[in-house]
Amino acid sequence: MSAVDRDAVTDTVIETRGLTKRFRGGQLAVDSLDLGVPAGSVFGFLGPNGSGKTTTIRMLMGLIAPTSGTATLLGHPVPRAARSVLPQVGALIEGPALYGFLSGRDNLIRYDSADPAADPHTRRARVAAALDRVGLTAAGGKKAKAYSLGMKQRLGLASALLQPRRLLVLDEPTNGLDPQGMREIRSLVRELAADGTTVFLSSHLLDEIEQVCTHAAVMARGRLVVQGPVAELAAGARGRLVVTTPDPARAARVLKEHGVTDLAVAQERVTGELPPGEIEPADLNAALVRADVRVRSFGVERASLEDAFVALTGEGFDVTG
Ligand SMILES: Nc1ncnc2c1ncn2[C@@H]1O[C@H](COP(=O)(O)OP(=O)(O)OP(=O)(O)O)[C@@H](O)[C@H]1O
Ligand SMILES: [Mg+2]
Image (cartoon, rainbow, N blue to C red):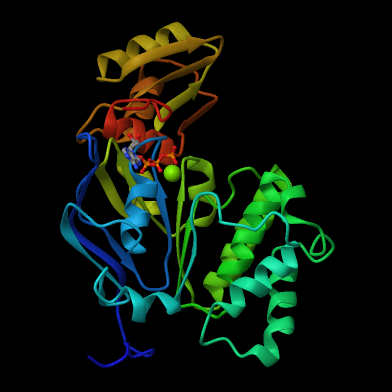
């Protein structure tokens, strides 16, 4: 078999069909997963704790064997072609393996030395650039065992960035980082994506996915709930109607007559769920005005990914299976 063609054109950089992992002991961690990650996307793999994200990533990286189903990375089947395709993939998976007695810089040098394709003459420069990218230049000489969780996370990310990659697979890359660190990683992800790298990242933080991802898949209890462009996922959940008026009681009555449900009145603010189907917000507004309700403002709050998640799963995001 020939080596993987580095320029192979693939529209879908990660594809799984019926990918399933049942652990010994019977735990069904990933259940018939069909995932499609388009080239050039920043793809968020979202789900609460225990929903199967890390297990999926470990199967994609050839670290554990699926119980059934198939997966391809950059168009090549894994685990079969893992050896030839993985050099094009940078990965950061839960708790990067570090030598505590070595400095951060020496950990990267060691890591780079283990890569037969890495030119030893340019090693120091490559390591320095990777440290710089993740903001660890100043701490590069410190022993890794003295690193904070966030610093370890950055070092793991640096190891994934030693070589240019077509695909980066990052398992909870902002885990353990403070808000400033999270912002830095997000902007790094955007930069990498702008350079043409497809980034697949897992997270249990909805707002993080909304801020950085173009596409997302939502997992719950090992099953895929939905996947697609983030804008479409959020649009799938209808926003909440919000009316401000000095006549809240009358407004609530009129809205109820027109099918608005889950009405709540708080001082001059009336909110409710739009009825499913045809009714136009503009018609509701007209009905309020006809009933002599004085409307100060009228609008539909933008639905967030969180609304979509709740609508799709019927549960709050932090509920575990
Ligand atoms: N080696 C294992 N043996 C048995 N069960 C496992 C093993 N690894 C994971 N599991 C179980 O599989 C399920 C999915 O775990 P996984 O680590 O993939 O979730 P996750 O979505 O990555 O969660 P988190 O957000 O907490 O990282 C969990 O119920 C977990 O307990
Ligand atoms: Mg995990």
